[in-house]
Amino acid sequence: MRLLPAGIAVLALSAVTGAAQAPQQPVFRAGIEILTVDVTAIDNNTGRQVVDLTATDFIVEVDGNVRTVASAEYVRSVDHLRVVGAPRKAAAAPDETFFSSNAKGAPSGRLIVLLVDQGNIRTGAARSVMNSAKKFVDTLSDVAGDHPDIGKRVRNIPAIYDLDVRKKVVDSFSDYAQILSYPMPPLEHFARPDRIEAMLKIINDGFAELCAKEKDRFPGWVAQASLAAPDASVRESERAIKNGALGVQIYTNVNGKPLDRPEYEAFFAAMNRLGKPIWLHPSRTAAHADYMDENKSLYEIWWALGWPYETALTMARLVFSRTLDKYPNLKFILHHFGGIIPMLEGRLGPGWDQLGTRTSDTDYVALKNSLRKRPLDYFQKDVWVDTATFGGRGAMLCGLAFYPHERAMFASDCPFDPEKGPGYIRETIKILDSLGMAKDKLDAIYHGNFETLTGQKFAK
Image 1 (tube, rainbow, N blue to C red):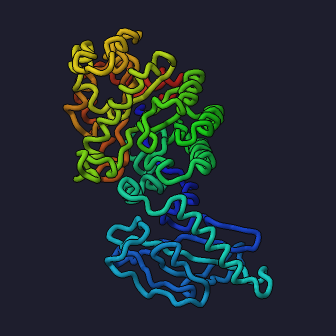
Image 2: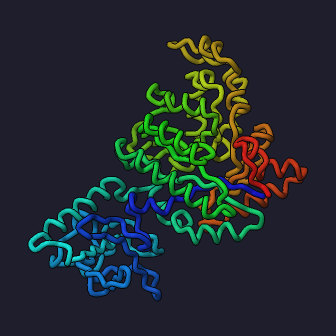
Image 3: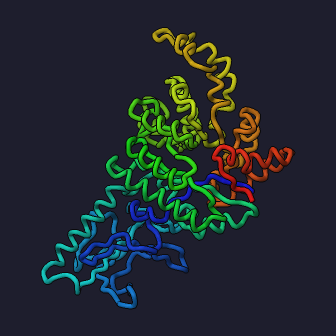
């Protein structure tokens, strides 16, 4: 059996992110009986999003009763949401910037439909009701908005938010299942700290419910934390692990802050005590410039080269801050086979054995001598890694040669391949199966090492 730690968004999260999705559930309900529903209407002939629908184009029934559709309008942003009777925009100009749509070739946009049970609204209160609805949608947008860059990326991959699509991907491979984790972007990129705990609960409870219903396809899940709210993340990590989470995922920085800051220590102390794995996912945006005299990263360098560097950078800070010495029971799983770490064996080994010889204003020699281990050992022997190399055979060989075999675990970075689902799974399996490993060695990567780390049996 092959186990793939894979990113998938919890479907219930649409109520928080405001992503354009099929109207499976209303995203707003109040005692005054007003609902808002996000709708994506696609022209079957062109594949493009329909943007000129009106309230009369919709029929909504609840328990067999027809409900009044008070307004249906395609809007640029929630600031343009208008009350019933206000002029509507007939069509979206192609050069306008809208909220994103998951329709290929469609103009990015969002259709907001307001349903009002007018019989439950007292005379003269309609305007107040509409204002309340607008306030809610404004708040929704304030939380998520139109997240750029990696937000654009995940919105265009149906297998991240469409469960039926994801199940088809899983079912296309024999003897295969996925361990689910939250993808991108980090919650701290778009949510205030005081809102993060509630959002984490939505993610983690959604995973628990989904995995309980789909055990054969998704036999386990990884809890999400956000160190922008460190105390909340400790509480939520403990709660999620009690609810069955195999471990907790965090990112390599917290809105640009390194993980060795004192305010994050409580989380590492808690995870050291709990003894569960920490999935460390790289994070960097285009705002992180490639050169000091520039304002942003160009050509997606922040992702292609920045993310692999982020993983190594974060590990270095955790090593030299002595976080790993202080909390020796921390179990980090590094994504993408450790990023650039394997190919830098010489620099991290003999190179950092000479730490301090290149620095004049700080005594790094004393720091190195205070560590419990050789610097290289922390990077090579004290972590676990996954095999997600984007189908790169050379990177796979490098990682397997560098890390102890029992530290490598199967993953493919599904569904971020060009096919948006099966591509990286297929190529990762193809590479591993072509290496001539003994069956017990191959099985260890596919599921055995992960089972040993988590203390749970998944292969049947």
